[in-house]
Amino acid sequence: MSFQNLGLSAPILKAISKQGYTEPSPIQAKAIPPILDGNDVLASAQTGTGKTAGFTLPLLHHLSTTQGQGYKAVRALILTPTRELAAQVHANVKAYSEFLDVTSAVIFGGVNQNPQVKKLKAGVDVLIATPGRLIDLENQGLLSLRHVEIFVLDEADRMLDMGFLRDIERIMNLIPAKRQNLMFSATFSKDIKKLAFKILNDPIQVEATPENTAVEIIDQQVYRVAKTKKTGLIIKLISEGNWQQVLVFTRTKHGANRLTKKMVSAGITAAAIHGNKSQGARTKALDGFKKGRIRVLVATDIAARGLDIPLLPHVINFELPNISEDYVHRIGRTGRAGASGKAISLVSADETSFLRGIEKLIDQRIPVEIIEGFEPDPDASTEPIKPGQNRQGNQGRRKNSDSRNSGGGNSQKSKPRRNRNRNRNR
Image (cartoon, rainbow, N blue to C red):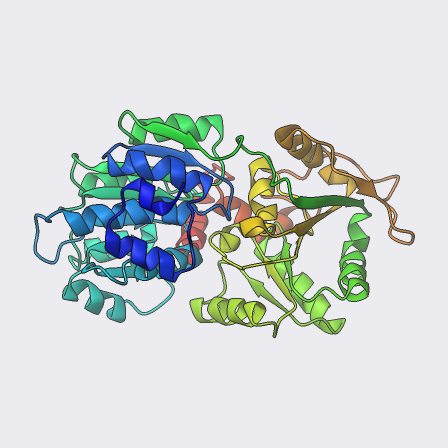
């Protein structure tokens, strides 16, 4: 099948061709036709399979071939959980609309709002936004969502995991009841699907790959190791393997900072990226990583959403996620667009249950290896660390703010702090 068979307009086909694409990916081939027909769509596909084009191409086709109801009105709203993903989606929208009379803008927190407001006042057809900044500008009367025709939730699983459901519901009350709804994500749990069906109207469900399965071409490896020896092992693997581009995942922001400092001390150029970093620092770190000035990028799950790094050869789980579906998303950062990749996990005793959950989810056993000098501690407890805690007790609970960002912790005391942390990630 070619893009010409999908019913997209000539200017869009021209833009696709300019980007070097000739055939739609499976998710694009399955999602674009029902979206063009005006249906609500619930789509699940692994990262790196072309989800963004799956909804932006038919969205742009609709906007360019129909007349809007409001002058300078936002006609399509794309909601994303993180700044990086919002910027990435906007870049794709601009590329695909190059030969169309369609305007677009992106808004997110962490930066001065004035340039964003200036673009909104000039008139925008497609608006890509994170929830916090969107609600903030609407509260100030600086934008209107009364003429939205298409509403898109990108990375919907993470949107809900991060506690954005109330924000989503609030935004839905600001847009017309009569609209087309699209929900795209790398993974969907059963609970999230139930919530999704409350948002979508009689949706068509499309899936490019079996749900929550790891990309087959990714070479997965587990190293059993004592918790205190993880840092030494990861430095050994990167240094002796001469790996030049490695994305490392930690469970918390403070853990990312600590590991980054130790890598730099060991002579490995590294940078951390997480919600406490300013947008300028995050952009600089990502740019340095892509251009090879930085060998290792240490990230939390939330900050890594939307990172588009072509041909990334190595992903390392310095700590396993306590949510199994996040493992699928993490390793999906490598092995993109048909390229090979290697995903390594350093697993200590207290992560044993996390590993079992991951293997059950992907329905396969991951090869295990033990490296001499970095053996696991035979006396260590296999009791898992609870979300929001670590072995350091209260101090660890205070530090584990990323767990709160993804929905952990329900006490009234923690709510104000959780909301402040979440706002920084928008």
